[in-house]
Image 1 (cartoon, helix red, strand yellow):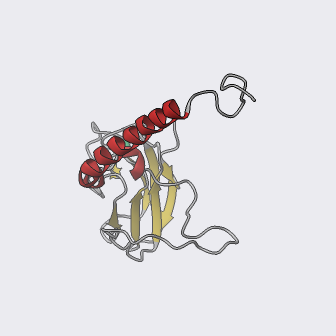
Image 2 (cartoon, rainbow, N blue to C red; image 1 turned 135 degrees about the vertical axis):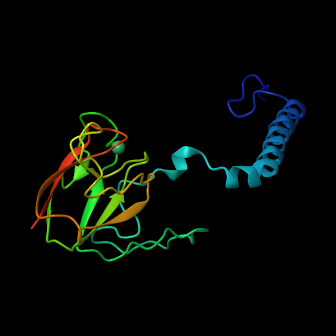
Length: 180
Ligand SMILES: [Cu+2]
């Protein structure tokens, strides 16, 4: 016959075992009650990290079958068809990081450009070399585009030529729009 101390399985009395289980289950119940009472609040105010875009587009994996996508409560506005796309890159606000893709964009006069802010920070695409440039914003200016949003630039009234542009929030973000 083995004593409780000898057993590798049961090193305590069943009475203490039950006591321990009651404590564990009790903690789980308290945790569940707290989580459920906060559920609506957590749902309406999700943590910032849940808004970050995954690096891989899960809805369209390369060479795979798309998994079912949970219905979103608020669908993002559909992006319009434009002649060109100018993407403001994620991390563009960090000085020295690539800001625009492409940063040298060439379009035909009259073309439309989708300016897509893929970053989480607000940015602009404003013609000129900086705030002190007298022509700043005179040819084209998206004004502030919040993170994850987009605007469409028209080039109907933009003269042919190479026009430098920058971001009024982060003037070190620069590029050139060439209109032919
Ligand atoms: Cu910016």
